[in-house]
Amino acid sequence: MSASIKEVALKAGVSIATVSRVLNDKGPVAVETRQRILAAIEQLRYVPHGAARSLITNQTDTIGVLLPDLYGEFFSEVIRGIDLAARRSGFHVLISGFHSDRAEIEAVLRALRGRVDGLIVLSPDVDAQSLRRNLPETLPVVLLNTPIEDRQDGADFDAINVDNHGGAFAMVRHLAGLGHRRIAFIRGPEENADARERLRGYRDALLSLGMKRSDALELGGDFSEESGYRAGQRLLALEPRPAAVFAANDSMAIGCLFALREAGVQVPGDIALAGFDDIPIARYITPPLSSVHVPIAELGTRAMERLLHAVDSKNEHERRQETVATTLVVRGSCGGAATDLD
Image (cartoon, rainbow, N blue to C red):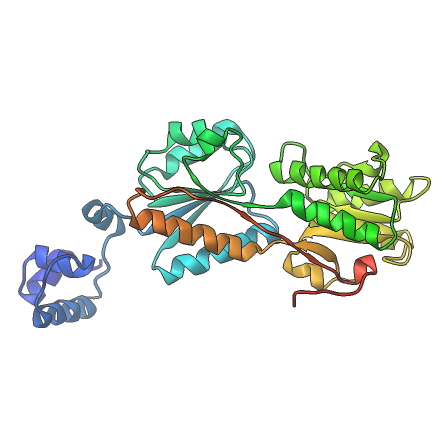
């Protein structure tokens, strides 16, 4: 069994309260006494009990992260950015996933109460009422790519969002600038706010260019490689075929690329291809994938830094809503001159 705080106090010849002050860095302790306590802790290999310590300090040193999925490079990059910032500040990360079920989301929120000092929420399915109903008012929350439709409700939370509309708009205009007039789009899931904004950017860009929108050129997808592969098979049957394909995320673009290559269609020689997010693997496929670059890991880092500020200020701070710009990264898959960020 591990040593107790009482044993540390006995060995160092001090009170339990003095040991507690050293452990929690609270209150004055003489240098010599502190050194004696630290030596006793090392000799006894004492490890503070996290739950007991949190009762004393009212702090868990843990941040919760709520994600709709734990699969895929996008989410792993977000988590990497969050973890880097958390470790720099001495915090641990508790990650929980769910599957777009409202009751499940609310159960997860309730389960996190008392276990975390703050919460990062990345979900298209969480609303302000659910957060208020299931979390204490004092708990800091940062919304990451989590839209709250009611602006007044959204003002109650710190939020960081991606300019999905602007990124999609710019990519379509880039493809048109290469001479492509028949541009297909592989949509994300209808219930996903990012997917809806990327679809809106695609449609608005066509309108701005005086190009007609066609339902036949909007192919369904769900952000998975498999759905991109199926969309690629469907667009091969279109007559005439599109000159370019823009997928609402890179995973679907990669699945589409496989379907095209399987059918002997050359990219970009026969069909240009582009994606969205610029996940790390995008630059290493053949041909390298043109994409709308989202600073994914940086999003996680910024969300964590924003949350730690809220934790430090006891959630009594000015809320900020921020939209992060995207950048076009042109590689071999769309046939344009390369402008890679590498």
